[in-house]
Amino acid sequence: MNKRTHTITITAALDEGAIASALISAVEGGSRYWASGFRVVKGRGAPGSVRLVEAYGGTVGAMLWVGSVVRFTENAHTDEPVQRTVTREGVIKALGIMAAEYPKAFARVCVGGDQDSGDTLLQLAALGEVVYG
Image (cartoon, rainbow, N blue to C red; front, side, top):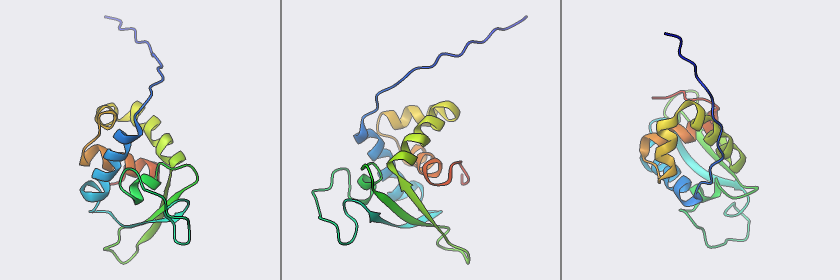
C-alpha cells in the first residue's frame, strides 16, 4: 500500500504565562540535574537596572522579556562547567523546534508545562538541542 503524507503548517498563539510556567518547572526541578545558578545579566532585573515588578517568577520571567539575557551554569557539579545564556529569541526559536521535533512536549508547554517539557524547552533554548535526558 502506498501511503501519501502531507504537511500542514499552522501558526499558534501561545500564552506567555504557560511558557513561563514550563520554564519555572524546569528551573525549580526539571533541569536541576544539569543547570544551576540562574541570574539576569542584562535587561530588567539585572544588577544595576531599575527593578520592576517581576511577572512570572523573577529570573525565569526575564527569559521572556525583550532584550533580557539570563545566564546559568551547565554541569555545575563537574570539573568543566560552562556558562550558557537564554533570551526571549532563544525561547521562541526553541518553541518552533519543539513543535516540529517534540510535539508531545510542545503540547504540554502550551497548557503550562511540567518538569520534563520545561526541561526540553530550556535545553533547546540554551543548547540548541536536547542533550540531557
